[in-house]
Structures are given as C-alpha cells and as structure tokens.
Length: 169
Image (cartoon, rainbow, N blue to C red; front, side, top):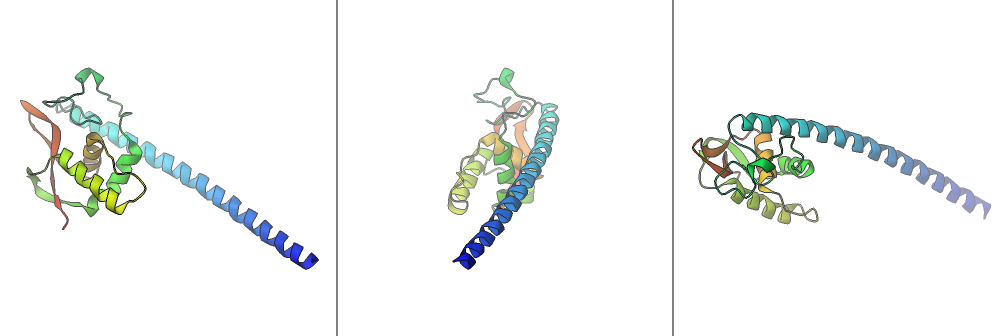
C-alpha cells in the first residue's frame, strides 16, 4: 500500500512540474503574441498614413473616401484601433493558400468578393474559429502581405479594393 502511495505522489509531483512548465510556456507565448500584435498595429498605422496621403482613408469597412461608403469621413480612425489585429494576423497566414501575387491588377474580383472567398475557405479549413472578416481587415491583410491595392481613380475612389492577385489553383 505504501509503495502505491509513493508512486501516486511521484506521479502527482511530476504532473505539477509539467503544469508549471506549461503555464510558464503559455505566459511566454502570451508575451510574444502581445509583441507581435504591437508590431502589427504599428504596421497598420503606417499603412493608414501612407494611404491617407493618397486620399484613401481605410477603415474596417473599406475606403471611407470611396463612393457608396456608409462610414462618414469624420469617423475615420487614423490610429487603427478599429482594426482587428488578431483577425488580420490570421488572414495573413491563410491568404497565401488562396491567392498569389501577379503582375497586373485583377479587375474581376473586388476585396468584398475576395473576403467572402476567405470566409468560405475558413469555414471549410479552419473549423471552430469562425469565418467572418471585415472588408477593411481583409484589405489591410492583403496590403501588409505586399499586394498592391487599387481603389479606382483619384476623381472616382471606390470603397472596395482591387488587387494584383489570382487564385492559387
């Protein structure tokens, strides 16, 4: 009986050590995630500034300066807090599975249509994590991945973007 109790105690001690190690690893991952999130937020703010100089004011909806925008220009958020950094980061990992960079702008599919393709891809391939992404978060992820975004002409800006992208298949 004593032998069994010692064995159980050893097992419990080992499990406590494993739990502590897992907890420390989780804390380290959390700090790394925060650092990555902060870096991504800085990149988002940089993109917002770059596009604002061109008269394109990105929001979670799309280009607020574009025709048909339901977001008023005075609601524009230049510090990027309206963007969902986690969703953008997730999209940046998934987009290369669906699209690849090409030389010319693809005029057959807007960012709004492409975001729906990503959402459907997520439903099939990323079960349990939810598929929704805003048009603006999708546009931001594409830009951060190096795709060139076109919002129409200076005199006729659009809400949705066109990209130099084509399907991988």
